[in-house]
Length: 225
Image (tube, rainbow, N blue to C red):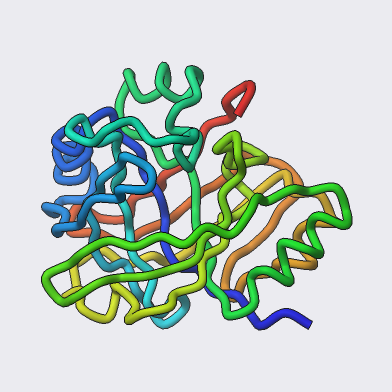
C-alpha cells in the first residue's frame, strides 16, 4: 500500500524567468522569491510559499529553460521542450502542472504502470541553495510529457530538507485545487489530500488568495501534450 500523497507544488512555466516574475507581480501582487538551477534538466526557477491549512508546505514554482545552461542529454521535464507548449508560452506564462509528494512513489508509479499509465522512471535530482543541498527523486518520462494536459501529477520524494521549510509567508495562499479528466484507474491510486477530481473541465484550476484578491488560474488543453 502506498503512503498518502500531499500536494507539493504548482508549476507555472514561462519563456524566461524575468517574464515569469513580471507575470507573478502583475497577477498575484508579489515578487517571487529566489530559486535555483537544475543541472540535470537545464532549467531554473523562482519559488514562494502558498501553504495553507489545507495544503501544508505547498509552494509555487515559476520555471523556465536556463539560457546559460548546456542542453541536457534528455528531453526536459514538464513538456518544456514540446513545440505546443513553447507556442503557448509565447503568449505568456501558464499554469501547466502540479507535483505531489510521498514516501513510496515508486510503488505508485508501478500501480499506474499496471493500468497502462507510464509516469516515468525515478530520477535523482539536486540543486544548491544558500541553506545547503536539496536532493529529491522525481518521476520523469523519457519524452518529458506531463500527461493528461498536466492533470496527472508528477511524483516527488524529498531526500533532504523540504524547500518550503525555509520559505517565509508570501501573502499568497492556495485555497483550492481541482483536476479534471483523469481516468478512474489513475485517480483512486493517487488521491492527494485536499485535491478535488472532476470528470470534465480545465485540466487544472487553482484558486489562490493574494494581495490582489482571489485569483483563479486555469491550465489549458494543449493538443499533443
